[in-house]
Image (cartoon, rainbow, N blue to C red; front, side, top):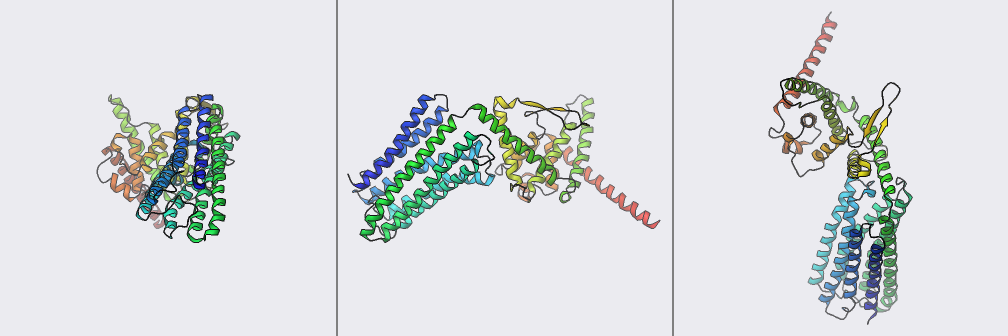
Length: 469
């Protein structure tokens, strides 16, 4: 067997050992997410099989070598795509912004495009990709770069995400250590594509003597980096799936509380009554809500269901305040965008509600000596429903919400926000180009605007009369 085949088998053996370790861990800890452990072990087996299959292809035709190399790339890209998607949805990476999560979700598409381009170039212009000690033509370099550069970017970006998730904001030491272990593993793996680019440059530009000196060095460094990557990830997986449920609950709740306090400060500092002239919109919402409530009370006396309550007035106002916050271009003190803050808070609250241990949590809040204490619970959080509705209204850009099926307080908030230009021209054109709210909502808001105009006119007339007198 050639040195190339031996190197490929060594890499295959590293991933095979990782597969064996994960399967053994699954048997020892049968209750530590066995399905996920099995999935990771199968990914390791796939990578090992693909590397092993290329061990005997170095003497075959160049097209066979290209296909064998593409199989290895397919296994690696598949594994990293799964990990990127898991990161995008993972709780402990919640410090990552909305746009960074979108980038993580895009990684599978980036890698798939890069792999397809790599295979296309290789089949169009065949190269001896598995003959590591042989010289290579100039087009061998773009053939490698088209795959290695996106791979390096995606792996390095995941390492950055793991590093953020291992920061001091994580209060549980075990979880911080787990994320740092994943960061180290990703960092080691991110060097492998760079090392492969160096290898490609040596094969294209170096003479025979130089190649025979540097290629063994680069191959051995690839093996060492692979061992370090696999070792760090196995340690991280073991730490992750052996976490105590108490640690998970404590960390989730601590993060939710920090985000909630930050959100409350941002909401009232950015959407105060004088903020960018939005006081008039909030005043109109208050007047319109009062009219809708009075009408609802009249209907209730006639035996009809109560359609608008005092609590709905608060929900409508909170929804408008949320949209003012999202429309703000300011950055919060800790360099978090309002959109990222709202997105993170929604994720945390939903995670806590899904967990039976935290969903029913409640505690008594004492404001001050002048206000009586009140019982707070996650399920009855007054801001959660407006947050959820706003997320569907703003973040889900590909669908048009059926506002007629929504509560009247949300319809009122949408009309007021559209009037203030908080939802954007595209949203208004898509969703408000036809009657999508109940007539009573539009009428109540128009009456509120008319009342505000009459009030301003009365004030001006009073001032002018006073000046004349």
